[in-house]
Amino acid sequence: MSAIWEISDSDTEVDEESKDDLQRDESAKDSGDRNFSPPGHDRPSPAKKRRSKEEIEADRERALQRREAREKKRAAKEREKQEKRKEQQERKEAAQHLNSLKPENYLKRLTVCIDSALLQQGGCDILLGTLSSFEWRYSIQQQRLPNSITWIRDLPQLAEDGAGTVAEDQLVQVLRPSEFLDMVTSVKKMMDNEEEPVVDSVLGPFLDRDGVKAITLLVTESQMDYRRHTLGETIQSKYGGGNLDVEEVLVYLQLHKNISVVFVNGWQDVTDHVCAVTKSLSKRPFKQLTEQSELPFCVDGSWASGVRVEKDGSGLKQVWSKQIQQLNRVSQATASCVTAAYPSPQLLLQAYKASGSEAERKKLLADLAVKGEGKDRRVGPEISTRVYRCLTAQNPELVLD
Image (cartoon, rainbow, N blue to C red):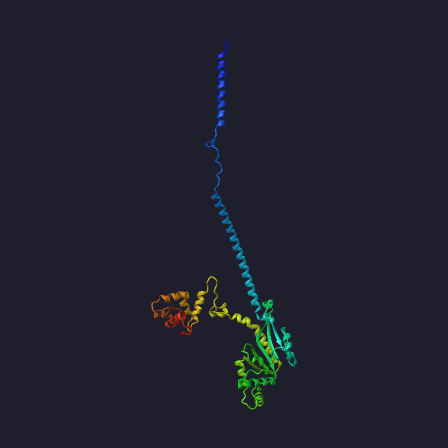
């Protein structure tokens, strides 16, 4: 017998009510999920903080300071560049100046000025030909002193001022024996009578000078014994039998007027003398420049037994040792011993100052041991005293020994 199930109306109503409750629960859950938010998210975001006037001014001041610092740094770099360019330019000019003073370059700036009256003498072509063969510059023009030869040099740095040349201090005058006799007679008369310089003499314009120019008289066509015999007799006869001495006149010209007399055989000797003077003038500036060392024991270059001092100070101890060796009878070993105990003059002066008496200062270095190739010895009181006097004496005329 089959069972037949029947659903009553009450059961149907219960099912419908359960379904409605379930739908309400699901909708509430969905709404709860949508309303959920992380903690703090529901607070409104704060508004942007506004800066005060003082803060704005402070920021502006800091920006201005940064700008000034950049400008100062840029100006410092620019000054450094300018100083570097200036230093390079100075080094370049110094190198050019040094190069211009070399004899081979300085010779190109010299000009031999020959008096036009010398062209009338037969041997002058020897001089002109020699100057042309050497490619030396020369000019023929009238000189203040007749029959003379002078030298001028160009000064390019003064060309803008209109003073492009300067005269050298050398002057050569070529005289015949007869002209020389007249000159000696006039000078001797002036010496004996203490008169004013003779105007009609060949040296008239230069006899009243203070010896600024070095004048050389070249007496041509004269033998070696001409001055001693024939010249003296001729002057004595012309002067009326007085006691004339040619040597006295020559000494007077040399000592008081800076005038030398040279007796030559002919124009070849005159040419050789002019060439020698020209070469000497070309070498003089460079030689003077290389001899300007103020400290002979600290010259630049090992060829002169000097010591090179670098910018970091290396080499000063060797200079100090060289300075001690300038004293008489002070060997290198003795100087090294002193510099080992006192590496600088200042330290030695401080030790002198710390000593109690004069006797202690003089004997301060006496007991220092000097190590040599032989047996050991001491510096000794004599050298110690001389070193002390050298560093502390106030009298420049004091004799150390």
